[in-house]
Amino acid sequence: MTDARIAFFGLVVEDMARSLAFYRLAGLDLPAEADQEPHVEADLGGVKLVWDTVGTIKSFDPDWTPPTGGHRVAIAFGLPDPAAVDAGYAAFGAAGYTQYKAPWDAFWGQRYAIVQDPDGNHVELCAPLPSA
Image (cartoon, rainbow, N blue to C red; front, side, top):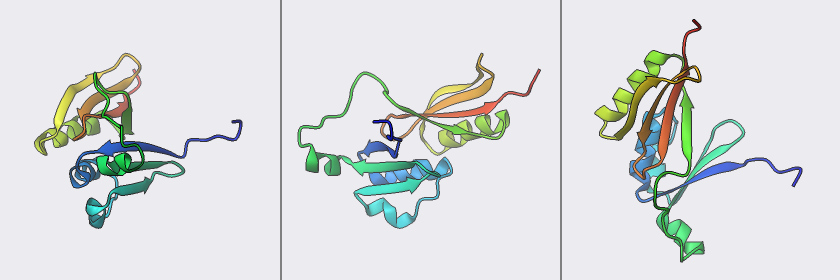
């Protein structure tokens, strides 16, 4: 597999419109007509983020069940500065999404916060801290 490269990251969603509304708030340009589709793709510049409804997954894997016990994958959005992390966290909360971990200055040199998308996936907001 020496020629393998990541082609996409996939999310299984209960409600396509609800999930896409969340990712629009995160800054992705997703057309409104995609809300009714069972499969949606967004090119992120060489790799894609894709969404599939539970029905789509069960069409080829009828025994599929959602994972339990916490998140397995996180998606991180890099923001220009620490204030943007705080503003993004507040915007997700104001829109009714779950604010999982309030912004903090992480020891690895970033302002960091975690929200959850409608399906419980961690979506992390991060920005470099100013140099000391």
